[in-house]
Image 1 (cartoon, chains in turn yellow, cyan):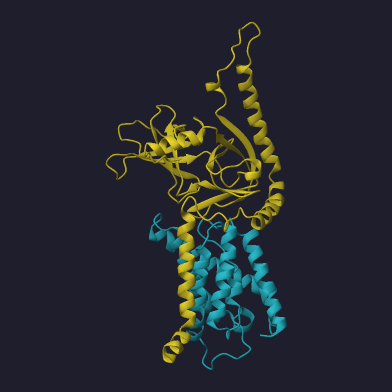
Image 2: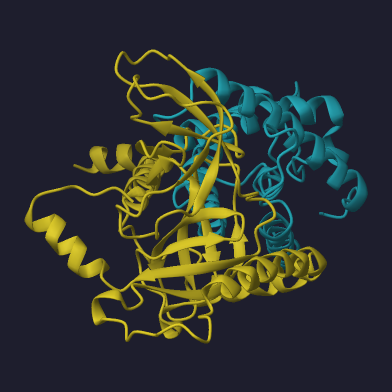
Amino acid sequence: MLRILQFLYSLRSFLLFVLLEVLAIGLIVSNNSPQGAAFFNSSNAVTGSVLKTRSDVVDFFSLAEANEALLVENAALLEHLKTLNSIPDSISIQLDSALEAQFTFKGARIISNSLRFSQNHITLNKGSKDGVKPGMGVFNEEGVIGRIKSVSENYSVAFSLLNTELKLSSKIKTNNSFGTTKWDGKDSEKSKLLYVPRHVTANPGDTIVTTGFSAVFPEGIIIGIIESVNQGEDPNFLDIVIKLSTDFSKAHYVYLVENARLDEIDSLHMNSDIENEF
Amino acid sequence: MNFKSLITYVFLVICLCLVQILLLKNLALFGVAFCFIYLLAILSFPITMRGFPLILISFGIGLLIDVFYDTLGLHASAVTLLAFLRPFWLKAISPNGGYDDANIPTLPEMGIGWYISYTLPLVFVFSLMFFIADQWGTGGLFGVLNKSFFSSIFTVFMAIIVQLLFFKRRRGI
C-alpha cells in the first residue's frame, strides 16, 4: 500500500497535469454550447468593468468616425420619415393591434470584441437591468453583428457573426431564395452562404439580407454582398462566398432588436419539433 | 526564493497579464502571428521550481486570460501543457556543468543562443495546442501549423525585446 502511495506521489505533477488538462478541455466543450456557463465570461462584474474602462479610453479616438456614421444614418432615417408622414388631406385609420410594433430597438456600446479566433464573442455595456435578454439580435448601421448569448446585470455577451456556432437565416435580395449564413473560421471579412440549391441564379454583387423567418432579426437587414459563386463539391448546393458589409474591427456602437413575439414563435416551433436556426 | 524575488514575480505576472489583456487581445500580425507575452512570466520562474506548483500557477494564469478573452479553457489547457513540459525540457538542454542554484532562465542570465533553444520549442508546443483546440473541426492542419509557427516566433521575439529593455542582470528580475 505504502509503495503504491509513494509511486503516486512521485507521479504527482503528471497526475495534476492530467487533471487540469481534462478540466480545461471540459471547460472548452461546455463553453461552446449556446447556453454555456454564464459566469466565467466577460459579462461578470469585475471583468466587465475592466473591459469597459479600456474601451472608454480606446473609443475616444474613434468618436469622429462614430459621429459621421450616425449623421449618415440620421439623414437616411429623415428621408424615410418624410415618405411616411401623412398628407394633410388624406384620411387616417386607427391601426389594429395585430399591426402594432413587433420589434423594439435599443442602443448599446461594444466594450470588448475579438476577430482572430474561430469562436468570436462581443461584450456589450448593457445587461438585464436595461432589458437585454438572451436571443436578441445585434446589428449596426452597416449590417448584422450577432446575437446575444448570455446576460448579467450590467453587461451582456453576444455571439459575433464571426463565430462558427452561429447560423443566420438569410436570403438573396434580388430573387428571394434563402439559405444560411455561417462563418467558416478563416477570414474576418468573408463568410459563406450555405444551402442555396444549384438551380438558383446567384451573381457576384447580389445583396444578402436577413429573412425574418428566424424571429430574431426583422426582414431585410443587410448581411453582405456576394463575392463569388462556385459549383463547389456538394452536388446539391452552390458554394457562395459573401463579403460581409460590417467592418467588425471598427464596430463600436450597435443596436439591439427584440421581437415581442419571440416566445410565441419559439414555443410554436418547439411544439412542432422544428429546430430553428438564428 | 526569498520575499523580494516573490514580490518581483507577482509584479511581473500582473504586468504581463495586463499588457496581454488590454493591448494584445486583437493584435495579430498579418492575421497569423499572435503575441502571447504572458508566457514570459511562466518561462522566467526559477529553474529549481518544482512541477507541481508551476502547473497550478500556470493553470490559474491561463484561466484568468481566458475569462477576459471569452475563450474559456483554451489558454488554460495550452499553458498547462507548457508548464508540464518545462522541467523536462530544462533538464534536456542543461549545459555541461548543470545549472547554478541561483540561475533563472532569462536572457541576461543565460545568453541568447541558449534562450532561443529554451523558449522556441516550448512556445511552439503551446501555440500548437492553442490553435488545435481553437480550430477544432473548422480549419485544416495547414492553417494551424502556419499560425503556430509564426506566433511562436513573434512571441519569442517580443519576449527577447521586453527582457532587453526591462530585465537587469544579477538582480533577480
